[in-house]
Length: 338
Image (tube, rainbow, N blue to C red):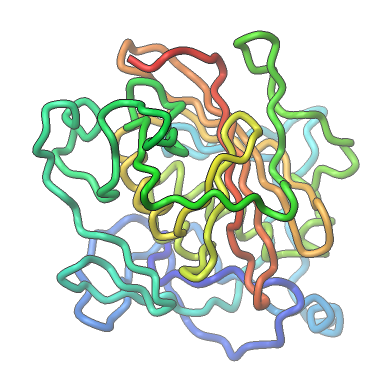
């Protein structure tokens, strides 16, 4: 998988000179200061980030190839092709820009200014249940819920697995001008999934997506790599340290946080939760320059039961980069925290 992370460009970008990045299987590396990691993922080809109009003029380009839709289950890629399944599209990947980070006393500092904190050693009894590896990265978790001083974490619906509460001190309540996330539907305490969208508007597994906005297809891949393979660098590629992320819980806006804080909480969640499947189910355009990518994450709770969280990610074209601006989560079944 790639650790020389790059922002995912929109189709409206001006052509950029090719920058080589190697991609393939997980090989742990400790890069020196100012040097990118060089882990590789052999089953990936370079990503085509050429603007749409430029690609149309390029008659010599390699045409897309078709395959059945796939989903990763326990890090195994499983073919879901067959009768009634629309073919997915794999676009040849050719041009990728670097995403470098430097190891500092405070943690990883990326070339776009993003800082991911160093691990903090577990020191309180209540933390052991949520941080089984003995450390965590986001420093503002709270041991209990007090409505005046605490919010529910974006990962609070991983019941009994992820630390559910965070301090309000590093959150802002500034209602976004528009809410783009997919809204979950509930029958009582049970979630039925997201509000339906017209199948014609769902670009998942559609060649139209790669023709219109190939960068969104790459963003989908980055999300899968982050939440299935635990590669946090993939999520860094979709964030901007200057853009705060609006958090929605069960379809309602609650607060906004720094993108670095969201990534650190994601790191902690990925280390704590056993993901069984992470399946993207829809990709659709909300408005010009805004796409929503939604799906389902099945995890195993502390009792060994398979539980599901519905997740929605909003990507907006900001400065010609696809940038994460909103996230939403909803549990399969509402319950109290232990």
